[in-house]
Amino acid sequence: MRLDGRFSEVFRCGDDSGESKRILQIIAAVFSGMVGGIVVADPDGIIKMVNPAFTVITGYSAEEAIGQNPRILKSDRHGPEFYKTFWDSLLSQGKWEGRIWNRRKSGEVYPEWLSCHAIRNEDGEITDFVALFNDLSTVRFSGAGVALNYPFDRLSGLANRATFYSRFAGEIVRKSRAGRRLALAVLDINRFRNINDTLGHSAGDEVLRQVGARLSAHLGGRDRASRIGGDDFHILLPDVEGIEDISAQADKILSLFDEPISAGGGRFFISASIGISVFPDDGASAETLLKKADMAMHKAKEAGLNSFRFFTDELGRAASVNLMLETELRRGLEEKEFRLVYQPRYCLKTGRVSGMEALIRWHSPKRIISPLEFIPFAEETGLILPLGEWVINEACRKIARWTEEGAPPPEVAVNISTRQLHQKGLLDIFKGAVGRFSLPPSRLAVEITESGIMADLADSVRVLAGMREFGMKVYVDDFGTGYSSLNYLKRLPIDGLKIDKSFVDGVMTDKNDAAITRAVIGLGHALGMTVTAEGVETREQLEFLRQSGCDEIQGYLFSPPLPAEETFPFRNTENLALLWP
Ligand code: C2E
Ligand code: MG
Ligand code: MG
Image 1 (spheres, rainbow, N blue to C red):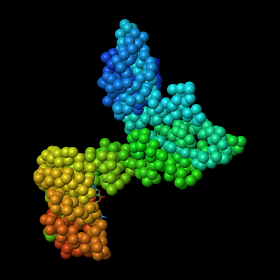
Image 2 (image 1 turned 180 degrees about the horizontal axis):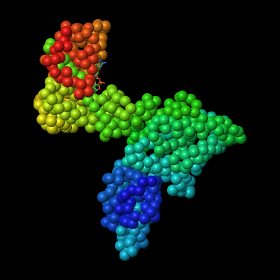
Image 3 (image 1 turned 30 degrees about the vertical axis):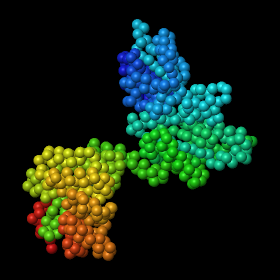
Image 4 (image 1 turned 90 degrees about the horizontal axis):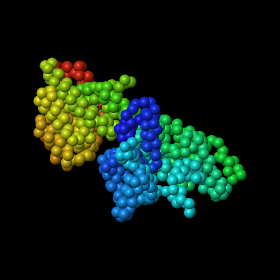
């Protein structure tokens, strides 16, 4: 357990001895693991600390609560008399205990059992108020005897729902602070109703008792699982690494059913279905995770005997890849493992290089990774923003270097993904980079896909117009694969279209591809744009494009994307004309 620095602050425990540290660690564990809410306030009643259960019960996060007066929780159910008694008792006897109605952040009024203590120093001055409370609205009353604080299910011996989910919520808070994962497993006994129907309810109860015992023995405690009702068990897997690890843990739980059960005078085998959801991949709240784990459990049931399923198989598989990829991407960024390669675009009329496209490569320790593998994921996690900013700056740095070397490229285009395009301040990032390297903005261009533009058309118009005004060129990338709404084209400030490689691939073999390619060229020209064909690999394609009036080509036929040092011949536009037949 990590020692929370604030404990020593709040409890003013200055000495560093091992013993005090140990005591603080114990307090920290109790504080964060408790099912009940805890509030620590200063002598003026200002909240200075709350535990995770406080947030679960009241709905206020620690950030929202700290610095406030506990009055934020006050309901209108008690008159001034009530509070007078409360304070009299707290100040004269150092304690007040009883039932009180408070109000959650959501506005809901609920009953709680509150125990409030005034802490005094040796001089008798109050230094702190400590309040401990339990949410009575979640406690079930059984008959005449009130099972007020009994946190376990009497049949299975496992945690009850309130205990389990308050622990679960606390665990979510801790995992999100630590940037780690946890999993929720929903386990349902297959054909449990049959057992009840054929062997009777007491046999059914015996089965539930034994399942509870096996679970708590396996999990090493009874508060990591809960029987929620009937034969529905919820299990917290707090320390999970990746999907393989979670799968292994689920397998182990299923293997608890390898041994037969003795109940109702017989011995028989039962099986279970488990559904699993993962925090934060499948959701950040207990409610969402439960819903998804439950859906997964129903899928597992369809599959039949003893089996488990992730929220979706695809999700499960993707999550395991994503898990590694996200950590790896962050590390790659820190370790500066990204490089740009450059692919020239040629003018079909002159045979000269008309510009270059900067394409990112990830030199991870194991291999060079294609952007097709990590851009979508970087986009999803938001890592595309720092990555994209790096690309812009790096491209500008190279343009400046090449200019110094006496061979500036006519123009370098960078690819901008959807999220980047609509981020705040993209234009400022360009302006900053161009200014830093004292470049004319016309040396820079952007390539944006149709889907990126359509994601927010109004915003796209604004951003692209800004770029053009600044002096940069704007191209639509992979044209023809997206919406292809002709309507937006005329509204947008665009300099050129890049015909997607998939059409270029088919121009010699597929009538439709040839027709679409010609149509795009005609359309672009009608709107006053240049048209570039991407992925040109053969002489035949080149001839077709030339005859169709295409302006520029890009592709392996003349050059693959190359590292900056190897692009010199392509920047030397005079030489390039010689490559021409
Ligand atoms: P794109 O912008 O359409 O880039 C063209 C892709 O086609 C590049 O793949 C290029 O290497 C490849 N290519 C060019 N000529 C040929 C050819 O003749 N034959 C074949 N088979 N392929 C050819 P790459 O570099 O793997 O990039 C893939 C996509 O990743 C790019 O498609 C672009 O959408 C994205 N991307 C690349 N770099 C960046 C970046 O810095 N930022 C962002 N946001 N996206 C990037
Ligand atoms: Mg591109
Ligand atoms: Mg493209």
